[in-house]
Image 1 (cartoon, helix red, strand yellow):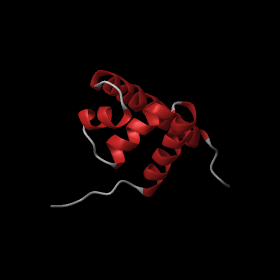
Image 2 (tube, helix red, strand yellow):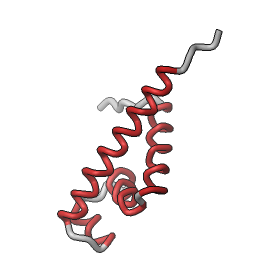
Image 3 (cartoon, rainbow, N blue to C red):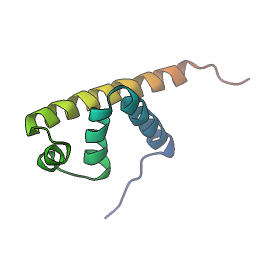
Length: 85
């Protein structure tokens, strides 16, 4: 089975975006960490953070959208930067 690793730049950008999420929305960042890093299911996350499964799923959807927007903005900003001459 082949494992495909994402480029290191993408991982760094994702980690930075998660840190920004943590400063603005710490509860959502906690759900991202538990889902992404600990690979917990929604029921397990809900039990861990003391929220309902539906609230946990709603916060997950919010966090994913927020991160996608942040990552899109990061890519747009770097694409607009002039090349060194």
